Image (tube, rainbow, N blue to C red):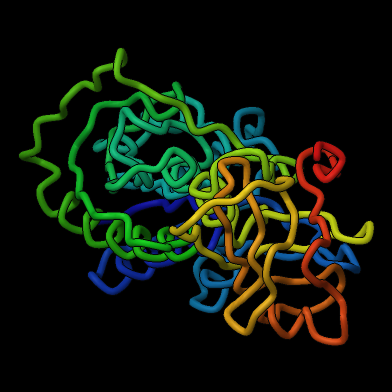
Length: 321
């Protein structure tokens, strides 16, 4: 098929690569403009742009696609059979959605109508879901509300982070996309049940701060959901500690302040939570440094039992004793 591909992050790459590998003619890639990134705030191209340029595929980067007549003209001139959208990052207007004879389809990282929005993978983990999946649906101007063409389900693995789950879903989505395109002329679209819909809004950096007053299992969900981005973190000695990996521990409970370091051992740093259970930090990243295991961070007296890791709003829970 002759198509235009809309996508931006790394999670969109498996679908784009699969389309090319299957022999589809990707005539144009539409992606987000280059954005400042890193400590130097240098303009950085989206992964999809870099991938396309390496393969000599024309790239279009409208700042606001809904208000860009020139972008519309370039997309229309392709005369595509279909538009494929995977994590593009902008709302596409009906004038572009309806251009191809087969309209436009979207690969979404949840089982719609659950988790409509920008962060379906993170919200599935935050809410303790045991299963998730991919939905390919017919695009319209409303957020993830189009008719469903196909779905694929998968279990969420124990300890899986958002980054790990997204990697698996991106591969599953690429497979489902190819299967859907192969059957596109015979699929009967199914309307979504809007009464069952849930939302997965964008997460802010400040949302990642840990609240130690909740159960250890909920702390574990937040760390997994916010890894690798926008990151889960605490404050220690007025500096940010990003939590990269850990686990909620089963076992006897004892009284104490939430956020208090109970044990420091080679296996990690055990911190008391609101249900008096422990959360073991296994891997972390100090501010302005690289990732390391938690025990290495504890060496040289950097952290010891009775220290308090401040969480929500920088609150020192030790004052509650």
